[in-house]
Amino acid sequence: MNLPTKLTVLRILLIPVFATIFFVESIPYNYLISAVVFLLASLTDFLDGYLARKNNQVTDLGKFLDPIADKVLVSTALIIMLTPIGIQILPWYGSVFVAVILARELIVSGFRMVASSKGKVLAADKSGKIKTFVQDVAIIWLLVGASFFTGLYNWFNLTGIILLGIATLLTIYSGVECMVKNKDVLKG
Image (tube, rainbow, N blue to C red; front, side):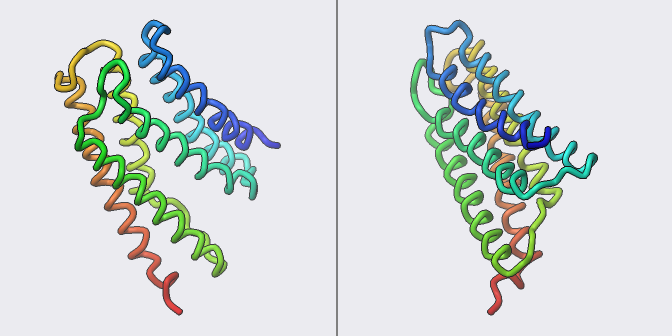
């Protein structure tokens, strides 16, 4: 197992650590610590791909695990931020953002599976990478804000919600772009 794949596995292992710290309210600044764990896990996403391409260490295992790790990390963070423990991080309409983001991920994953069955590999577009970056920033921002500000509608939380709204729009755009660019996948 090469270093990029080990980083992907590390990201997968950090997911339950992240979620556990989030829910253990007896840990001082649990949301802040979970934000740091999420940040570290997110950084492995950028680092593993960079190292795999730079060192020509792209493997089938890495290509399989990396998108799964990414989707499970972001999905876990978004879903647990909907739970009203301690303080509420996302308002009711945050669940709409989460539903749209998760739906897009499932649709694009299915689309990629169909493409793969036809021998076509769909690489991530620039818009998808920007979407992931904005999602990660929004999640970290919301978690840090939950550590220091109370109430659902403080300026820090509102900024995080706006970032998540932007991430949702980017999610829709990148999903549509992927399907339009590769519409031939669905022919036949």
